Length: 446
Image 1 (spheres, rainbow, N blue to C red):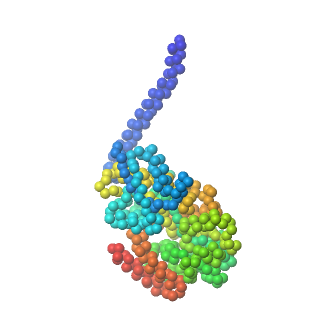
Image 2: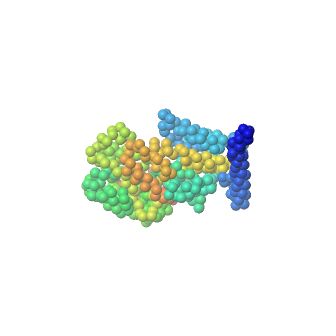
Image 3: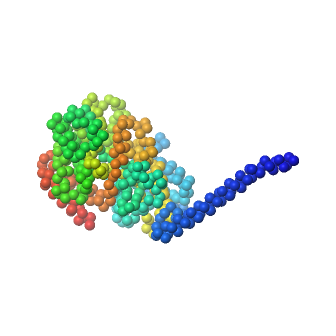
């Protein structure tokens, strides 16, 4: 009788074990059938790289090229240490690869990348501004590897900067919107409605009028990067700097000329001393400087300094001037599709898992809306939230070939703009000169 009772007591456990084994076997069979179906489906559609390409049993070695950001991780500086942590977590899902980090300089990283792209020997994975890689023929599209929640632009900022020819070419990490920093005290003294500008933005004409109002009150306008301002004004008019004719440049150049000339080297110090009403276009570097200043001085800023973030001049529906940092995967010459599949999946993991630490320390807006980067920040929460709203405005995609033409012409264009701002060159003459500079660079590239 006791044996019978023991058998009855153990029967449910045995059945549960059998059910679990059976369930596992069934799920394995279902997954194998599903994988087989998708492999045949994409093979029929001539898609070589997709999430169901079988991975081999050998160890893959992938090269990852990224800027060596000066970040604290685990109580010490070490961006490579953070990457090792991310890779170890990913290897639990894909225990078949080794990632070799190839550091890039913080200043002008695209120089090294473009040399390798021109030679046709890119690294497996590269991180950087979207315009650094977009348009290269060896880029791998990532649409099939995007999680469902990412396919809506509302949940992943910066997607528009990576979309071209109906496909997505990288995984966005963060966005650095360009902006002006205003001194609320001086702007209100000039009769400018700061809150209205923040809520509704300002058109190029309204921006020019505000500059005039400040100059009438002897309040300086500090233009730190006139080329970026010109690019933003061209976007507001529905075109780009590279596509503008000399006539189309008249209005943007008139706005730039209306800002007046200031000593470039003194702008930042003058802003914090309460002598500049509007400074910019600025970016994450200014935010880090602002944060460090508050950390050292607390709230002890100059009496007449009340910093506030303001948008660049735009028109309704026009794209915004932002830099989208993304992770890209490249086809390796002579390699099989399995290596390319792994490169895309590791790129996605790097884009997801490196952002929280980077965003908090570099003061950049994470692409994924659910990432918390504002907790514990020294800067006012209201300003960081406003920065997020600017980062959510769609960004126009820029290929590396467009970026190349603009970058090599930047110094000449800036010199031209400085002369216009100082009233040493007419708007008409400047427009003709800028068009000639860009056309000459296009011939050099071709």
